[in-house]
Amino acid sequence: MPVDASDARPVLELERATKSFGAVRAIVDGTITLYRGEAHALVGENGAGKSTLVKILAGVHAPDSGDLRVDGIDVHFRGPADARDAGIAVIYQEPTLFPDLTVAENIFMGRQPVRAGRRIDRRAMNSAATEIFTRLGVVLDPDRQARGLSVADQQLVEIAKALSLNAQVLVMDEPTAALTNVEVDRLFGVVSTLRSHGAAVLFISHRLEEVFEACQRVTIMRDGAFVRTDPIEMLTVGDVITAMVGRKLDTMFPKTPSHPGDVVLEVRGLSRTGIFSDISFQVRRGELVSLAGLVGAGRSEVARAIFGIDHATAGSVTVDGKPLRLGDPLAAMAAGIALVPEDRRQQGLVMGLGIDRNVGLASLRRLRRRGLIPRSAERLLAEDWARRLQLKFARLTDTVSTLSGGNQQKVVLGKWLARDPRILIVDEPTRGIDVGTKAEVHRMLDDLTSQGIAVLMISSELPEVLGMSDRILVLREGRLVAEIGGSDATETSVMRAATGQEAA
Image (cartoon, rainbow, N blue to C red; front, side):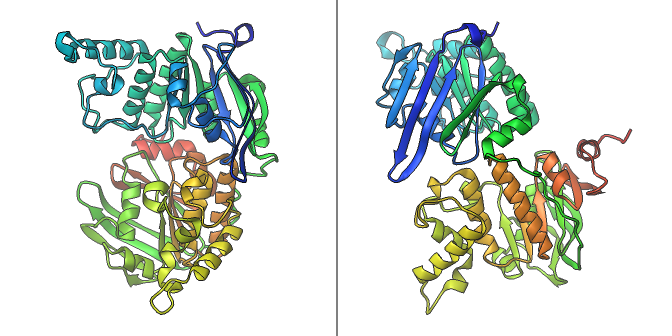
């Protein structure tokens, strides 16, 4: 049975930790206590200091001051190996396995059991891996190559690796961000199993409904400082949000009544063989239309085909009544279409470039003077959008990799909004960002529609779809199966259409 934290000795304690990077104080009071047999949530807005705290626990960063104890003993990690030897393992949002090695080889990399002659004992290694997966209550072939594993299965391999190292503290950083509902349920089952075997699980997530489902206690940080720790049953979602942002959010979905104008985007019979078929819809000026559906329904693929990244095999797209040349992103941009992609790090930003360079990337032709891009012009453009979007940063020349997820998303939005688009396509606009920034993004989308911009939004979060949409288009298995007015839509009606159930 899970350990009662009130009667147990902490397995890990971090008290009053501080950490600065130059003039930036990432943590001014990092405090958290973990117990065996407990899932403990760490929540806060982007930039609250969560990632830095995790890196202190992982031995990546040494705190400037403060105390860290494992099983009551003071420790000073000189690197990740020290943290690993102390029984602390971090399962990152994007696992980094060796794709050409097997599952078992990834688990026991550098520690493979050997036979006589120093040859790797594959049978013993696979048997040990199978035993760990059995303990976790999951089935995964240890002899399977890691390449092609789902993100959920990759996370299981990382968890198995941690258990093979006798980890007693497992830190899960945004583990559900890229998982389906079924995979999330399986992960929560694994967390429950870990707890039952006496492990402490630190669970970091922006999805508060998951925090309340999976965790027993929650620690809240704001602006690099500890705010409070409470048993989950003593809190409401509203309590957590207020503590995170330091204020009450009037509403997560500040949707104002819309007054749609003329049709600005029309899609007719758009198809891509094997992906989606015969997609037709319209979006009007000042209207927010959502594409809803289950993962794999073809929503992102439709958006990519409209923008020209993927080639459609049939159909047409018109903007303001003028045909758009398909398969040509430059033509889409010239017509006034902007696309904020689902994966901001891989597709929306150049992580090694500064904030100013990233904001200007989609506007280079406008910024060009006599064949050159003046740095002053880039800087002025970036300053303008940083102010409008309330971007949090040290210097505009800082690489976007140093920003929190929410601020990275703002940079992507600024890059496209600087082009004054007629049509804004946003794919998962609030994935992986905190509740405060989510409310800011929602307010921004509402402001854009009020200015007459047509917004096509793709989201897997039903409350977001219901709260922000004028109309909802539901896709299932690559086909458009329903159109529901925003005021008429419910979670039940959208999910029935997405899953193919008949209305009751």
